[in-house]
Image (cartoon, rainbow, N blue to C red; front, side, top):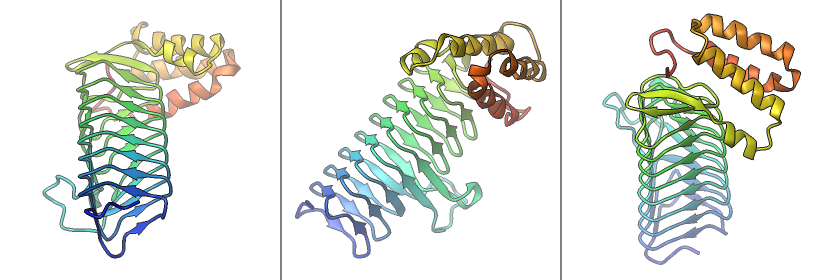
Amino acid sequence: MIHSTALVAEGAQIDASVSIGPYSVIGPHVSIGAGTTVGPHCVIEGHTTIGRDNRIFQFASLGAIPQDKKYAGEPCELVIGDRNTIREFCTFNIGSPGGGGITRVGNDNWLMAYVHLAHDCIVGDHTIFANNTQLAGHVEVGDWVILGGFTVVHQFVRIGAHAMTAMCSLLFADQPPFVMSQGQPAQARSMNFEGLRRRGYSPERIAAVKAMHKALYRDALTLAQAQEHIRALADRTPEARTEVALMLAFLEGVSPQRGIVR
C-alpha cells in the first residue's frame, strides 16, 4: 500500500491499511491511522497524528513548522481526527509554544484546495472550508461551520458553531454561533436558518435562534443587554436551551477589544 517511490522515515507509525502515493514524504514523528489514504507528492512531517479513514489529496503539506519568528524548534503538534477530506495544496502547520502547542482538526471535515491552517488553530467537526480559506494563528472554528471561498480570518478570531461566511469575507471580529456574514470587513447578514432546517432543527428551536439574532442585531442593545435577553429565552423556550447555552458561552468569551461582527 506504500508506493515504491514514497519515502517513509524510520519511526513513523503507519497502519498496515494506509495507502501512500508516489513521491510522498512521511517524517519520523508521524502517526497515520487505519484506512487513511495519502495521495502522491504529499509531505507529512513534524509531530503529526492523523486518525482513521482520512483522504489526503496530492500536494498537501501537513505538519510543517509554524510561520512564527518566535518558533525555535519546540516539539509542537498537529492532530487530525477521523474521516476528513483534505484536498490539493492544503497547508496545516503545527502549533507553537505560545498557543498551547497544538493545531487541531476534528472529525468529518471537508477542507477544499489551498486551505491554510496556521499554528494553534482549532477546528471542530463537520465543517466545510471552501477553496482558499485562510486561517491565521490561534483561530477557533466551531462545529458545522461553513466558510466560503477566499474567506480570510484574522488571528485569534473565534467562529461559533453553525456559522457561515460568504465568498471573499474578511473576519476581524468574533462571529457568534448561527450567524451568516459577508463583506470586507465581514458584517452580520442573517442567521443560518436553512442549515439548521437541514440538520433537523424544530420550528421552536429555529424561532429561538431568530430571537437571538433580533437581540444581537435588531434591537439596538449593548452586548451585555443582548446577553440578558438571550438568557431569558431558555425559560420561554425550553426546547432551545442547548442553543441558548451555546450562544451565551460564546459571547462570554468575546474580548471587548475585538467584539463581534456587526
